[in-house]
Image 1: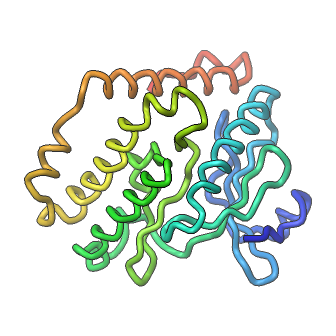
Image 2 (image 1 turned 90 degrees about the horizontal axis):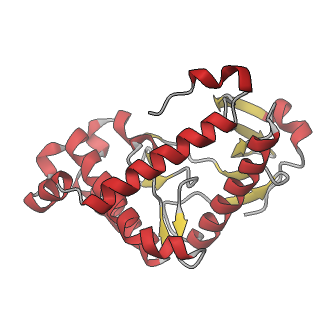
Image 3 (image 1 turned 90 degrees about the vertical axis):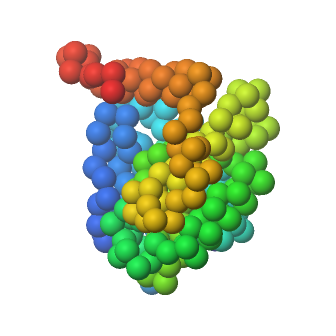
Length: 234
């Protein structure tokens, strides 16, 4: 997909709505429209400290690699490109968060398609890594699942660490699908899914804690010095 958002100077006039304003390490996320097409722009640069800019460039590169590996998978937004090193542009998907979608859309067929989407991603060597945030699972008006926000994605072959954590992250993705089903359509859960939801290995718990601590460090160092005392480990 070709990006037709020429540069950052035109973002304000093209903006349809702001999804999230920039805060600490978090990027500015907005929907823009140009030449009749809508895109999502995730930009780490507005008002950023040097640390956040460096981090943003790294995260944009990682996410771009994940989208490139997943291109062609039905249910993953198309990658439109970047606006400099700190901003990623992707296709806008018209849909709602699965947790707030009309109950009739989250039927057995939807979950079959969602499971198939997650398995196809894993076969491509991509683990989303953050589907526990169920808002990253969208459903279109015609009932198709989409996965968005690949910031935490791991791609096999990108580093020695990816090979070590990939199986655990794949389990996380699959567990998130069961979590969504338990929340929105519990009558569809089978015994295997119920058991899988209740299981957590020691390695998985350790990995989750490590990721939580890394996020704390990122927030701490991307916050001005006089405000760092308010940063909490969550």
